[in-house]
Amino acid sequence: MSTANSSDAVSMAPLAHWADHQNPAHVVQFYGDDGFLLDELSRFIGTALGAGESAVVIATKEHRDGLARRLKMWGLDTTWPATQGRYVAVDAAETLAKFMLDGWPDAARFAEVVGGLIERVRTVSSGEARRVAAFGEMVALLWIEGKADAAIRLEELWNDLARTHAFALRCAYPMSSFCRGEHGDLLLKICAEHSAVIPGESYTALVSEDERLRGIAQLQQKAAALETEIAERRLVEEKLRRSQSELKSLVEQRTAALRQLSSRLLNLQDTERRRIARELHDSLGQYLVALKLNVEILRRSPAHMELWSQSEELMERCIAEVRTLSYLLHPPTMDAVGIASAARWYVEGFGLRSGLKLTLDAPNDPVRLPDAIELALFRVLQEALTNVHRHSGASNADILIRRSSGQVILEVNDNGHGMSQEMLDRFREAGTGTGVGLMSMHERARELGGTIQIESGSTGTSMRIAIPVPPDCAQSA
Image (cartoon, rainbow, N blue to C red):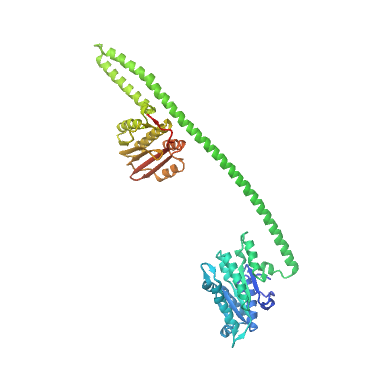
C-alpha cells in the first residue's frame, strides 16, 4: 500500500474488516502518517455503521473531522447513525480529563464515563442490543505527554471494561513517539495488553509475503548494525571517560605540585626576609652607627661645622630608614612578644606613611600563637593595608585581631569604593585570576588550613581570614 500524502487521501489497499477480529477484541495500530490511521479507522468504523451496528469514537478533533470526511467520500454520512444514537464521537482530551485523578486514571470514573458511552450506543432502538466498534486515542495523548505508565494502566482499564461490556476496541499510537532506545520495552508492554497489532504503514504497505520477509530481513540488518554502532559508541565513551579520569588525575597532581611549590616559595621568602632584616640590623646598621660616632667626633672640630651638621642629619635618616626596612621585612617585636605588638607597630607606622586613619583592636593577653600563624597574619595584614592604600581610595580602615572557637581571626574593613564583581568572582574561584597580593593571601590561608573571605560593595571592602589554632600549640610569652 502506498502511504497517503494527505490525511484526506483514500487508500484502497485491502485492510482488516472490523468483524474479522474476534469480538471482543483489543487491537493496537501504529502509524507514521495520519492518512494511514484514517484509512484503517474508516474501514473499522465504516463497516460497523454500514452493517447497522454502533460505534464510539474518542479522538482528537483533527481525526474526528478526517474520519467524517472519509466516510462521507465513501457514501456514508455519520449524521443519520448519530441521530439514531448508534454513533457517538467525543473529544479525547475532554473525555480523559473526566476520569483522571492526580495524573492517574481512576478505575471507577473510567468505568462510569467510558462504560456509559459504550452502553449508550449498544442499547438503542427500543433496547435492541448491538455490537459496538470503539476507537480510543486517549492512551496516545498520555504517551505523548510522557506518562507511559498511565497509558499502560489505561490499556488495562479498557481490558477490564471488556469483561463487562461487549465491544471491539481499536487503539492507535504515532510511531514517532517511540524514537528512543528505552521505548522498546514499553512498546512490548503496550503490545502485551492487546489481542492483535497492526504495524506501521512501512510494513503494511508490503502486499506480498515475499516483500514482507525481505522487509523483516532488512530491519534485522539495521537492528544488528545499530547494536554494533551502540557497542562501538560505548567503547569510545569508556575510553573517553578513562582519558578524562587520567587527565583529571594529572591536573590534580600538577595542582598539588604547584601548591607545594607556592608554599615552599612563601616559606623561602619569609626566611630570606628574616635573614635580610637581621643583616641590615647587625651589619649595615652597625656600620652606620659607627659612622655616626665618627661624624660626632669630627663635628667637635671648629671648622666645617655646617658640613658636619648636614652629615649627621643624613646619618640619622639612613639609620632610621634601615631600621624601618628591617622591621618591615621581619619585625623583631613579633619574635619577642607576638603578633599583637607587631601589628600595633606596623599599623601606627603605616598610618603615618600613607595618611590613612587606621584603628586596631587586638588582644593584650600574653598567649602566643605558633610562629607560622603569627607570620602569616602579619603578611596578610601588610598585603591588605597595601591594597587599601593603593586601590581602594579609602580614608579609613579598621583592623581587628581576635581568637574565637579554636581559631584566630584577622579582619580589615575599609570605606573605599570597593572591588569589581568580576575580580570578586575570580578570587572566589580559589583565588585565581587576581593580583599577586590577593593570591599570596589566599595561599597563606590555605597552607595553614584556614579560609579567607572578601566582601565588597560601593561602601567599602571587608577582608576576613580565619586560621585554626590547635589547643595544644599555644605558648606563653
